[in-house]
Amino acid sequence: MSTTMPPPEQAPAREERVLPRPAEGVWPGLQDPGANRIRMVVARSLLRAAVRRMPMRLVWPDGSVDGGDPAGPAMRLIRPEACFTRLGTDGLIGLGEGWMVGDWDSDDLVGVMRCFTDHIESLVPRPVRKLRRLYDRGQPREERAADAAVSQENVHRHYDLSNDLFQLFLDESMMYSAAWFDGPVGPDGRHLESLTAAQHRKVDGVLDLAGVRDGSRVIEIGTGWGEAAIRAAQRGARVTTLTLSVEQAELARARAVAAGVSDRITIDIRDYRDAQGEYDAAISIEMIEAVGERYWPEYFRAIDRLLAPGGRFGLQAITMPHHRLQATKASYTWIHKYIFPGGIIPSVEAIEQTLVRHTSLRIDDRRTIGLDYAETLHRWREDFLGRSEQVRALGFDETFVRMWDFYLAYCEAGFASRYLDDWQFGIARS
Image (cartoon, helix red, strand yellow):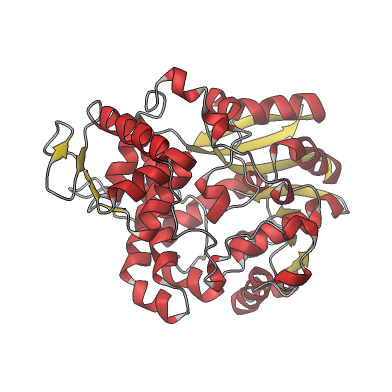
């Protein structure tokens, strides 16, 4: 729980909107879908029409079915009116909230979300899409990563949930980003390689792109739980790694001690904008998504400023198609509201354009591991659900468990459909 958040009666103006605080069991307004019959009827009509174009089924409480694919994943309606009211009022935020409270269910949540993701461009008729502004209020001003204080609060709301929670479903590397798999696959199409081996390959790939070797001075933007810094130090590098998460920093320090490399690693609770020094290499693994579009130039200028002549930058970033970034960058999504406040996923084009316009840096090497992220998320979700009783024992309620189930399934579907991708970039001065 945040030690800086005042009680509601003393909250500053920007906190007047009651925030969801899942770690504290705070779900403002979630149980009441409201009453708006017109929007409910419109949403019901749109979804029934959509499922007839998709390989899925909509199953009503009386057993009747919309959709023509008997083998497709089924979205089972438990409380149809509440489900469609949420959907008509808040779009995909309402869809996720309906899952969280049990308005609908499915035995194949990834499959249902994959259908929505695969057909995202045609899910809603174009004339109706123009009405998006009626329910899409845009990201709240207080969640945009304008300064270190706002960024730290956004980080706190996700990464400081509980180290024990993350340890329940992450592998021993404690990497919370896409792994990079190799080798044989089983008859089910799943990789046989361990997640830890794939995570180590991922980290080593970023370190190689940054040219990290014995004697390198390395700065890392976004510590996580310290695995990348540890592996860099094991190469003989000296690492300064920056994080805004107090809980992550504590565990990362303990892991560095256990690995015997704490003398080569400095872990600072510091915003990247305040970093100082000169380094031979910089690395950042899936941290740019939390920066905010407005601050991408500042992020890359900071790297440019910190790199010594001849230095290199290894970046791993989740990406989305550029046209979808342009269409949705001002939107407020379910992921923003419940998982990653203030976040925005860049496109490859946006990264390239920002580098060209604001730095002397250019991409000179790249690889995609997006489909490997679907596999990574599949394993995380299996472990999370398999240990859901332990999650509850940590103090998280049933709504939280369903929320994280939806989050992991939603993301797996996004990467499996290639709507989302994940890239490793080698970046150097032009």
